Length: 166
Image (cartoon, rainbow, N blue to C red; front, side, top):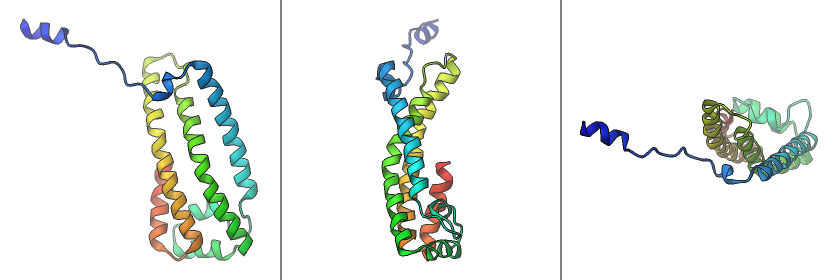
């Protein structure tokens, strides 16, 4: 009987909260809107700025599986396109906090009333930054591949980061 009383008197642990949940709802809504708009603008800018030709662009380089594929893409770029590709990939560093914030806030959207969905959303909001970390690794690998497309090691790093991000 003593053990039953001890179990029932055990304090219930409060659910873990995401730091964004401390923000008032109007602030979250405003930041979500701004980050979605910035994400759309940045995606459009990356598409518009990125090198495009018959050999492929930066996204094609991110999906390469072999040194030959990487070399055919990078060797097909002019010097100007290679410089643009470096800038576009480097600017992607700015995109990471924007999309991580937007997706995390969307996962925490307060319209989800069901407890199980709220837990899943909270869990997803905590996991989304891992995709940002994988994106940082992918960007470093891409910058190295643009400089040296014959590096099989960077292709492996890029592949793992590219796949784990999605």
